[in-house]
Length: 183
Image (cartoon, rainbow, N blue to C red; front, side, top):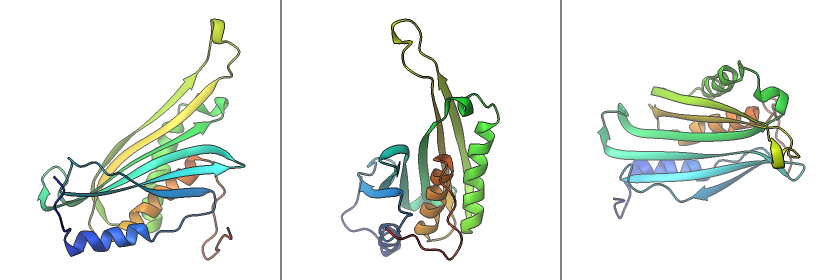
């Protein structure tokens, strides 16, 4: 479904997406994008690594359809996924889903992105092993899935908001405004 030469609008957004830089604990890579959702698509992945242990990961897909799609309410669509490993005590907290969603909402507001058709889900899991597997410690995860329609051509701001929410989910200490981390 992908056309040969992307329109300038998509190429510009892709350039902005490729230029993002993250905090030192987050490793970003370009990934294969889904081919059937829109004529033009790009995807990036992120892994949060602290002390050589992956604590969270995610994926962001940027979709563009020059004809627009009614369900999107526009020509663009951002689809994100984020997953973080939790301390077992946290995964039992019934408020955690609300907190996970609030992290994304706050990140989008903080980055000043303009959007519409915003929705998603937050899933928390808490696993306890029994029987022959009882030696395994309790395990918990928090998963965030969301999508929205950007009302601007600032793919990088939407990506930074996703990365901010991922950092919050991973329990990273916020980096103060104006401070640049050294690698």
